[in-house]
Amino acid sequence: MLHPWRAAYVNCVRGDCLDPLARYLMPMTEIVAATATNNEKQSATADARLAAIVDSSFDAIISKDLTSIITSWNLAAERMFGYTAEEAVGQSILMLIPDHLKSEETEIISRVRCGHRVASYETTRRRKDGALISVSLTVSPIKNANGEIVGASKIARDISAAKESERRIRLLMREVNHRVKNQFAVILSMVRETSKRSSDPREFEELIRARIMALSRSHDLLVTSEWAGASLFDLIQEHLKPFGREEQILLSGPVLTLQSNAVQNLGMAFHELGTNSSKYGALGSEDGQVEITWTIGSSAQGSGTQDLGAKDLGAKDLGRSVGASGGRDFQLLWTETSTPRPDDKGDESARKGFGTVVLQRVAPQSLGGSAQLERSPGRLSWRLSAPLASIIVPQAGIEGDDGAALGFGI
Image (cartoon, rainbow, N blue to C red; front, side, top):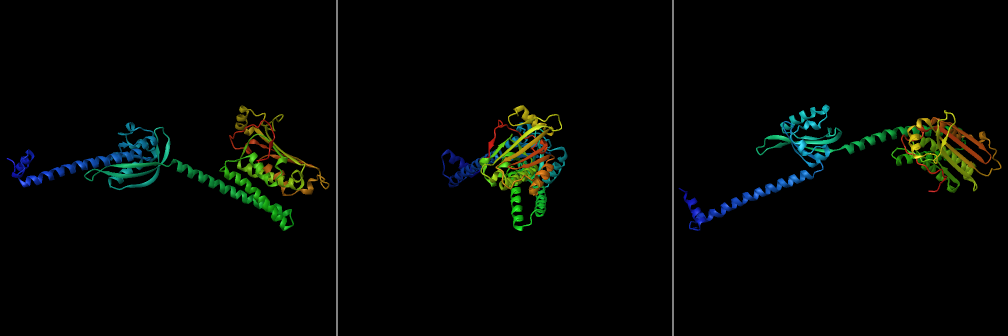
């Protein structure tokens, strides 16, 4: 037997709504049913939105139970670790952890069981192909409807690029530190040697300023390449540019990328040669000419050195010359000619200053080679010979220029 108000409700449904209570209860019941349906729709919409966020995230989002078994795996996790969701779900999270870091998982699970979050920390994980990647991890407990902890969610972000950037910065800082100390030593040597050969304070200041600026130009080339070296052509161009007369300068040789030590020492030599030429030689007259050529030859210790210019270096020879640079020599020749001056007797001892020390001793010794400096009225030549391995960046490419002389113009 139905309760009176329920019977009245049934009658109302049948169309006989005489009881006021039944007329009141009927819309209330419909409201409750509609509210429940609406809540279900909202919950489904929220779940769908959350799933879309997880799937579209660039970070790997993984869930696991308290036994470290993977229960969900988003698309970013597939890209990061190389496993598909089908391969990963149901497997232990330990497959991602290198052997020496597996203790991390024990600690993480113990903290999650206590309801604690694991703040973001940096660690290493292993991809499917065995490669190790640097990641930033955040771990949080997962609770069920009753508030019980049933697992953990992990968010992993690939920080390999950031780590590589940090490594390069540290490397560059060590290189800069070394170079700065080296520059200080060079500057002190400049000051000492220049002071021995200059009695006029104004002349001394001018010479020191010019030589420090020359060091700065070499330094700028290295900074531009992030200390990876500098082109020999660019080095010569940079150091001779302040003297002008570009149309009187000819360059010829294969394209070479110089090591940082070679950049510094050859830069000093070119500065001293350019300074001398602008005062006493070809760059100080209208009819003068400077020709700078460089070649790669077989070792001077062998029988009969064979110079290989840009024209002689074919594609196969290029690779062999670089790969076997230890058995090759670098040859550079600076030759300048001009109309002899009346007071130019070609006496080397008359103008033997710091520049001569750089050309005959500092540059060749720093590169493990030897040099010859010859002067005669209206002519000067400087020949440098050094092991190719002390000149070029290892495995640097060498391109030919068909042996043609290159104009200095930009």
